[in-house]
Length: 292
Image (tube, rainbow, N blue to C red; front, side):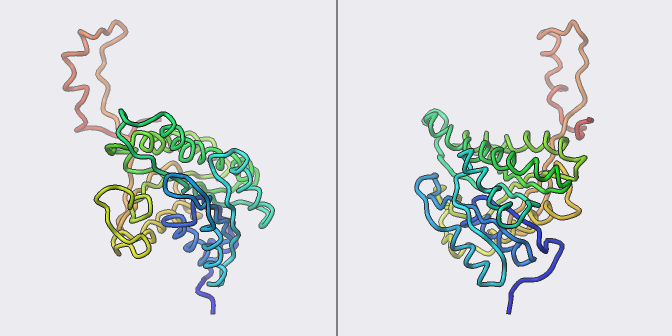
């Protein structure tokens, strides 16, 4: 008897990158159990991006054995042709793409003074460029069919900062910039894009010193499955557009940019004029969302 159920995601075609483990695997199962047809992408490499493997096949087998529908793709999102192949495989197998969850990522953590530019580039290429490459391949399809849902995966390391992750943080904050623009560009065609800021016990988190846990049996309060409800919400018929949602441990909340009222100094303003106003310039007590 199938473990899966009918829902608004029935027969939707869902592409999930980096879905061989952790968060992506959880997202794939949650969509599949609701009747979606899932493309499970994963290069199958290590947390630092090296190597390859068959983790995508394993997740597909899990889904199929539970009564769901899925295919595997093992391309790297950071390769343009590979990224295109992910969407091509979805079209070849299922004829359309309704939902794209950009989840693939790697870590190369070091303090900035010790980080090589190769370590900078590879993280930017996988997270930021990889998300752009796959989204760019799906974007015209979604706009032409006048329906699409896209999720980008950010992190508190980008939104708030985290020591030793300048490359990762820069890529993750870049997701917000891409989202802000694409939310405007896709809105008229019912293509909505949102950003996830997750927290869970995954392979990537386990590489951080002091984070000791079994990735195959994560602590209940840090389970990846507690992040997936936010992803499904951002991909639903009633999804918001251009929103950042934080999800961890069964807690869900929104992050948003706020601004304060301007210090008006006029067209002849100088540094000497601004310096005495520093306290007012930095005062966020009456801050509000920016007016567009």
